Length: 352
Ligand code: 6MZ
Image (cartoon, rainbow, N blue to C red):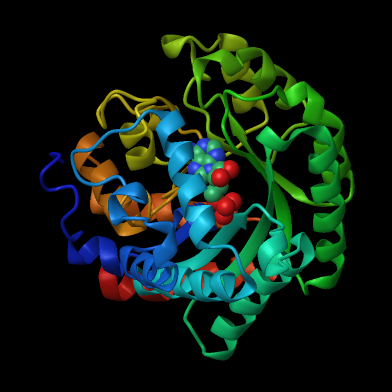
């Protein structure tokens, strides 16, 4: 698909396709419309739309992408904001045909608004519950995120918080995410927090090898092993990774969450055609298409499926399999996976 057609509506087939979204950062997923409301609520911040989204044809360095998150965090800094943003994001994913969503977000505390990390998570869970009550057609789970920038002590605190919610959230909190600027810090310092999370039953989705310098870190973190990998852009030898990394990923059959537009707009891959989706998909390795930050990168999951199909020549049958296989890579309990499988089977009759 060309750059010019990229921000247009995805075809009906891709919209109707039932989808599973497993890699979506809450504050990166805020839509243009919700952002408008936030900007109007806080005029004194003087924030404009071009500071919160990367549009068609635009590129940013990864570092610039992380500046964008800082701006969004200024706009989303109270319980009221989080509730509004989380509900809107869930409704938008549902409207895009996503039937199962794992949202992730980094709990923050903001003294000025009285926001605490505990309340942050409780508010996201409240948004999930309200959407369920309102019968929004989507099953939503939550991954508590560790921002690597904040170091080992904060990581350990976050794991303890996540562990509490794992026990008390009626199955909504299912795992832990490791994300944040990949050029900051080293995973070795976070290893004991991640190990603790794993030991207490939290599933692990770790951003790995998002930039080339993370090779040693990925070697180390793959020994945990994580339950899923975010991006994994530089794991394979053709881009400076290594056979040993690929072997570890393949041997343990760890699904990779692949976010095409995010990686192209953030310039960690040079073009859609050169995206590492191709490398892993050709090997028959478990791949899940995801949006990463649908608001910041101006995309949605239907569009990501359409882009993958047009770039790599996937048939509709292959696209269907890709979305269906993602059910198996969710952190949902077995009965939920079975329910989703049934839904896919029913919809297949109507759509394909
Ligand atoms: C690494 C990313 C990311 O947590 O405030 N985040 N981390 N790589 C990426 N690729 C572009 N995109 C988003 O959502 C925003 C936070 O998610 C992480 C960053 O830590 C960012 O601050 P939440 O909901």
